[in-house]
Amino acid sequence: MESLKLAARELEKANELLLLGHMMPDGDCLGSMLALGQALRAKGKKVEWAVPDPVPSNLAFLPGAAEVKVGPQAVKGAKPDLIVVLDTSTPERLGDLRRPFDELRRSGAKAMLIDHHVTAIPFADHNFIFPEAAAVGEVVFELLREMSLFPLTPDIATCLYTAIVTDTGCFQYETTLASTHRRVAELIEVGVKVREVSLRLFEEKPREQIVALREALKTLRFSPCGRLAWMWLDRETMVANGILGEHTNGLVNYARQIRGVELALFFWEVKKDLVKVSFRSKCHLDVNRLAGLFGGGGHIRAAGALIPGRLEDVVARVVAAGLEALGREGIYNSDRGA
Image (tube, rainbow, N blue to C red; front, side, top):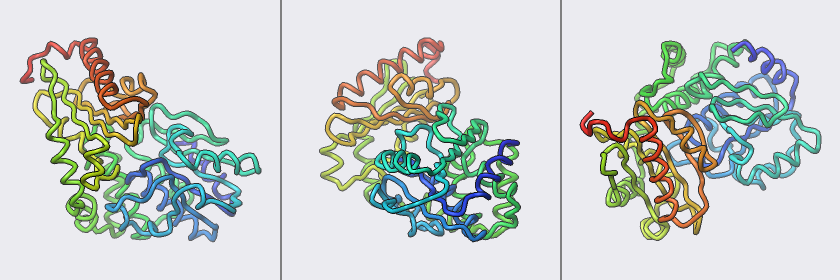
């Protein structure tokens, strides 16, 4: 991560910073934002945070989360020297913050992107993209080391630990390397309360999330070959049960975990004629490429897309594309039990 020297220099030069994250912020997005912001504040810099959508309830425990502002009005009047966008692969992922982001740049603010998605577009003045990183939290970890901000505080370590543990799927994904575990070990040594964080993230799910799982499982479908599984939630079901977007996080993995399934898809209706799709694969299929067919992207084994259209039409199109992709890879006709 040699180019982090350049990132560190730009951060050192700035006095007032605005840190932005993506739509439907996750643990890596918020954990990385909060860790970097708190470290910069410790150096006497003025820092504010903003995201397009509310902080999910399971991440509200993160130190500093209560200070994260939501929506375009939250950044009204901000006059940063530098805008730092984290874990956001395209400017469209800024959602309602895209317009104020562009306006601030026209007013003279510089922008920095710190990301790890293979589909990341270098849309800032300074772009630091590390597809080999398991999480942006790993990049921020090394950036803080580069800025001589070690030893980290327990609060900063907790934010970075959350970023890494969530984006690696609790260290299950192939992006998890020995270096990932070494970084996490350092964070734990600083004072991360692993059990407490795990409880907040994984064992205190809101009732609506379990209801969402119940309703999604009612729709579970399989392709004839058994390699593709998919589920969905329509708007009517979500409204009737008080299910929000944040309550759908991770549901796709229940389909992916089924023996024989290589490709799992989960669809939920954001609003009329707009569908959010989560793509997951187990071992072979590049779902980043598959999601890219629909204007989305992400990682090789995990990706997403926002697709215009009626729910049933989007499901049909994406399932057909998924089967075609499995066929190209020679997976479609594989032994179902493999």
